[in-house]
Image (cartoon, rainbow, N blue to C red; front, side, top):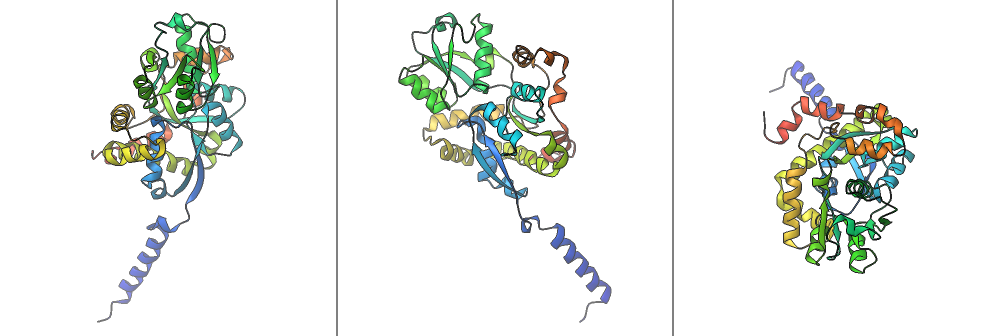
Length: 333
């Protein structure tokens, strides 16, 4: 029995519509390069999004590039060699005051999982005088935090304490063990490894200073000229956070792959920390930035007259939030 001509035409139209809009996987993926600033659990979400093929689902072919610290990372974004990456808020501010157009579109955690591990004989902050402290690189998050906390305890970085650019957490730990430095800025799980080796925690940055981190930063030009790609990236990041919280075993395997860690206690500890800390609705944080402003004002006092909103764009998270997209990720109505 033949179909009426009207039904046949309707099926043809539907077929064309489906081919054009219903199968985005047939379209070529948009290739971008995204910076990973350290080999630490804080960079878990990009690895999750990559391994779970969340980027691909959202039409992106993402190459994750390992960089060292926010200084190098911000320069790479400005030059266009990478599309975006985590960059510390003070680095964004300083770059923009210098004529760049960096913008923070999300913050993944409200505080920083980093501690200052020191040799056992160092018992109090004043014992750091004349000592060498290892950080990843000048201008990095660790550099900023350690300098701020040192000043909080009456120490002047550079005069009282020497800060050395050593590399990532594994390199800092190695320098600590070989006595090249007396203290090191370390994030979990490497900080836990250092404790097992007999080093002690002098301070925990999360308890010393309010500081949002693991941001999603790109150029403002990208948010204007290529908003679709930025949205796909932000959407993937948000989905990565939800996937992380819902798939513990998968997440632990991903961390094992990228950090080469097999110690179950370290893996479990990492997961428990970040399951709590990763923000489900990661709006850029615009409050509690006194420490950031103080740091930037030391070299650029004009920052005092600038509002946080000038360096951030919350519209991407707001769109995902108000549309109900994020609630659906967590099974909410």
